Amino acid sequence: MEEKKIKCAIYTRKSTNEGLEKDFTTLDAQRESAENYIKSQKDAGWTIIREKYNDGGYTGANTERPALKRLLDDIKAGKIDCVVVYKVDRLSRSLLDFTKLLEFFDQNNVTFVSVTQHFNTQSSMGRLTLNILLSFAQFEREMISERTKDKMGAARKKGKWVGGQPILGYDLDRENHKIIINAQEAKLVRKIFDIYLRENSILKTTTILNEEGFTTKKYMAKSGRITGGKEFSKNNVHLILNNPIYSGRVYFDKKMFPGEHAAIISPELFEKVTERMDYNRVNRKIRKNSKCAGLLSQLIRCKACNSAMFHSYSMKDKVKKYRYYICVNAQKKGYGVCPTRSVNAEEVENAVYDLLPNLEIADPLLSERYRIVLQKIRDRWNTYTAEEKHRTFKHLLREVDYSREVGTLGLNPYPKGIEMLYEELTRGEKDEN
Image 1 (cartoon, rainbow, N blue to C red):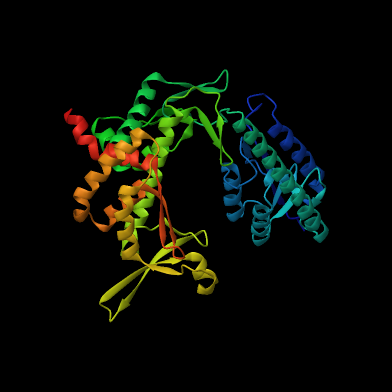
Image 2 (cartoon, rainbow, N blue to C red):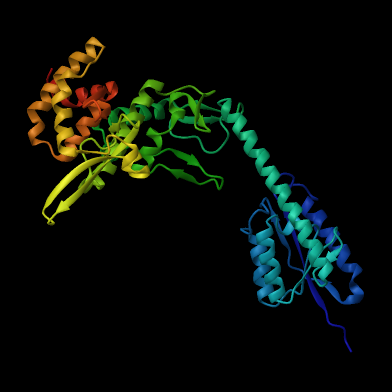
């Protein structure tokens, strides 16, 4: 009786492309070792199939590898009875992926063999040893990943460029591993920041850039193909306005660090734009929930509890709405712990409006600008929507402290917000002058 032939496929892998241009590579060494092992099993009917499955420059952390995919397709087609590798981690460094591959091999009656670790999955001991070795392989990969993250974190704290395609406004100095300013693109970056401050809208900024024919950065991909150079989207513009690299700094672990690269804009300009975007984001959130938004939402606090107060309302006979600001501490722990509890929203909003002329501002220039702003607001207040009134309060005030015990309201001015409102309300007058 003729002995059954066992068709053996050899799979090889290397994580990087380094050295693959040589006549004899690490992939060749892996294959030669596997071939010798298969030849030693000739009496058992083992034979080498001619197809080569070599993945050079592919990580073992996932299964997105062309040669591996071809191997799996050929297993499905019944062309392979045994898969031979030099070491377990050549097939995979992920325990989860490897388990799935073993299940796939088992479903298709395919044996898996590691040459240097001397086992195969035909025996239970081989399967146990395999899982132990693979656990260590994954542990090693995770350790390497952690060391890489630590190294990149240390580099970021020193303000270094840690890789990737340079952003609009910068080119890569490959020799010194730094980014350097691209003068032409830097002009566009400054223009983007200026437009946003003028228009106060990412969408309008994007529209203007596209109408004037500006495009995103062009760069060469690894494939050699030129990519980018497309119309701006809101996301493109937001990423630029939100990137501290343009101010000569690097953001890491919730902190700013001085960068090794030159700045395109000043840190002061970047902070001004960031505050404007943060403020606009809050306003958009308020508008989306305007059905139950109070004019002092996110501003008013219970002084006795040092706690925020939130806006709420109740309906009587499904017609009349009663609005309140309720102390968060009272709402969470019970009304007995808070002397303030709740306050009529309309009454406290009107009281804050009446107290605006008494707002104390130490800086003489800001005080004069506040006087001009307040006059313009009072001339328009009755025409404002609820959202516009809330936005105005957010510009003028950083915080409102309410104390029921002594019946007082404390108004804390917001200088930067007042400056922004002054620029907004007097912009037309400046243009005429």
